[in-house]
Image 1 (spheres, rainbow, N blue to C red):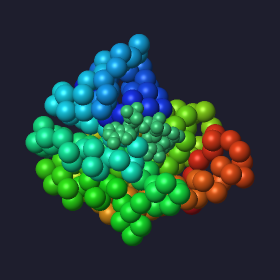
Image 2: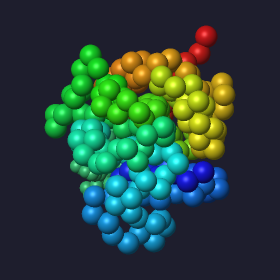
Image 3: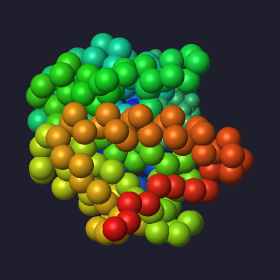
Length: 200
Ligand SMILES: NC(=O)c1ccc[n+]([C@@H]2O[C@H](COP(=O)([O-])OP(=O)(O)OC[C@H]3O[C@@H](n4cnc5c(N)ncnc54)[C@H](OP(=O)(O)O)[C@@H]3O)[C@@H](O)[C@H]2O)c1
């Protein structure tokens, strides 16, 4: 699949690299296009045109404005996987009692927004086998879009047992608020190699 990852930072490179390794055709989208040894880098607009599936890896606080500022008709009917956390400058939730995923879905009704992968550190999200069994969450209104995202999660090494489908896009509030617990935990462990695991 041709995946367009918006952003050229750590998340974009790490997820893009893992999906490339799994056989996908990955391009990155940047506000300032520069040469990259590992990826073809396009403008954000070119990326959303060419990608069959689009991944948001832009800083969460900037993503809504950056994406809705594009001609998003190019994304109509496509899946937008949002893997980010939207925080204020003081690391509080930017959208308390809501979520970036919901805001994106409301602003882009023709796009199939799916929230996932934002709850673990980048090393773990891109290769969950690096630690013991853990969970990854999926939220979105469109079942086919969630299935496409689940296939991409499988490609990263997430098993069906590890994937917790929470339901519609409003359920992204929980995983987005998890960043607060993530910060508290990493402050204690002083190591990003951990994750949440839903067990019964
Ligand atoms: N790092 C992790 O372990 C991790 C894990 C899960 C989720 N996340 C979340 O994923 C997101 C990205 O994290 P990251 O670590 O990859 O951050 P990063 O390395 O700082 O990369 C951020 C990317 O966003 C772009 N960007 C920022 N403002 C923009 C704007 N106004 N318009 C267009 N592009 C803009 C940056 O472009 P420039 O290079 O031009 O500034 C850069 O490509 C964050 O929301 C983060 O909370 C991170």
